[in-house]
Image (cartoon, rainbow, N blue to C red; front, top):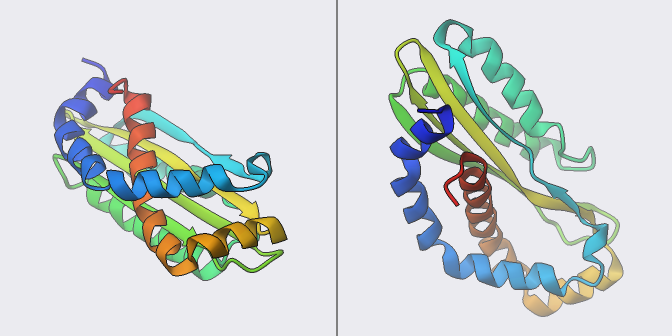
Length: 187
């Protein structure tokens, strides 16, 4: 059985339940993204991997994966929010060394809706299971980054900033888990 098949076998029920619970907000935010005036100006974030790692190499591997996860985040993103998300990822990766199986989600939402400012909505779905002397690990990234323009600002104002910001996390979580399932062959 491949690493992807093992991770799916251990985590797919939980992942699918999470996706189902968040479907309504996912559709509303997807509608918002489709209404933006120039979506081609948005940078899509969609990195991912699926690997089998010997347990004794997990620390070095986890550090490499953390770097890979944050490599696509634009430099204009709020450094405090980026660090908060990195810290969460770091803790999850350390915890994964001790678990038999599990999946987690971490988001980085940096939407201030100010014209000229970098906007980031990103998230990572992480899943793992253990073999005899190895850890099977996968992650998938989802999200977008863009610089707020006047036409975006008008569109987001119509939708309501507080309502939109509250639903973005759900959208990113569903999209990250969708990407993870696709990477693992489960969609």
